[in-house]
Amino acid sequence: MTERGRDRAVAVSRKERPRSDMRRIIGWGCVLLVLQFCCFGVWAMTVPLRGAVVAQGVIKVHSKRKAVQHLEGGIVKSVHVRENDQVKAGQLIARLDTTQIEAALGSLETKYFAVLAMEARLAAEEARAKSIIFPDELKNSASHASARIAMQTQEGEFAARLAAIENERKMIDQQMLQLTDSIRGLESSTKGVEQQLALLREEIADTSYLLTKGLARKPRLLALKRAEAESSGQIDRNAASVAEKRGKMAELEDRRRQLGFNQNQEIAKQRHAASEEIGDLRHRIAALRNQLGRSELRAPESGKIVGLNSRDLKAVLAPRETFLEIVPTEDRLVIEAALKPMDREEVYAGQIARVRVHALNIRRRPMLDGKVVAVAADALTDAKSGVTSYMAELELDINAPTASYFSSLLPGMPVEIFIETGERTFAEYLLQPMELRINRAFKEH
Picture (spheres, rainbow, N blue to C red):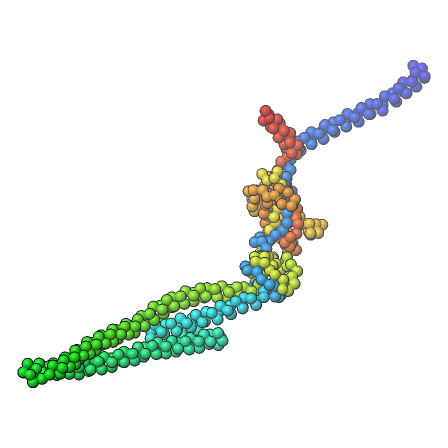
């Protein structure tokens, strides 16, 4: 081989060497790609990945906020707390104006004392007592001006009615005594006339005999007969007058009996009406006293004041209107999460969850541990946004290492929740949408 030929062969071999190196590199590259794809396939088919449902929520008190309301409402007289104040159970929060209630209560008590005293007076009249025995309730309220006035008024009326009845009885007795005396006089007069009549009749008999003998005159006989007739008439008139007066006495006696009977009937009716009115007044007074006792708004339990509307004094509080709310300090905190409808089937009670509190520094503080306690069976639609969601309640794990951060949590803080839904491979995540589409395609008509 000539030198020129050798140079050409060397040049050709030099050109073919890079090509073989490139083929070798490409070959190894393909092998590596195949190996990586196979490894990825094995990993995607075998290595499980944790799934999670992501939801937004808010920290709340387990027993909800305690709303402070008033049953009847009223005018705010004074407010003794401010927003974010810590209060204890039973602590005074505000007072309502009681002017109208006290005026109504005073009016009812005055009427009540008057009716109570009247009922005692009627009881004394019914028992024919000489004085009124007032109940202890009335005597113990003697310091009350209306109670004293009521007792004095009824004592005066009792004395007046007693005197009036006694005067009427005395008048009846006096009239009956006069009639009795008149009857006695008439009976005595009748006896005298009867004696005179007997003598006249004897004289008439003698005169009639003498007239037959011619020893007497006829006018004398006629005069005696006229006197006889007049005496007989007087006796009859006296008898009629006695009968009339006895009838009047019977009427007076009946009137006297009716006086006591009518009085008893009237007293019974008045006592019945008074008893009913006393019961009604007691009920109304008790209701007003209860309302007066509710004029002070007090904290139902210890906690923090929130939602206190800025109110001026003399502002009107409507019935059952929320005056403020109290966040209990001793109640445990829970998380209320809003689940998307598509995630509802994957969430159930007992699932583990991780909670990220947006208000905390996530670089320095870890995610909190918790679990699902309950999931709503029905969806709720927000009236403002129109978003439909299922509400779920989660509780934080007090035994977890992150429990030391719970003291920094406050109701109302927004959170992001990751609810673990189980383990699936990467291939299952990729194939699930395709599987759903295939199943849907086969079900379509």
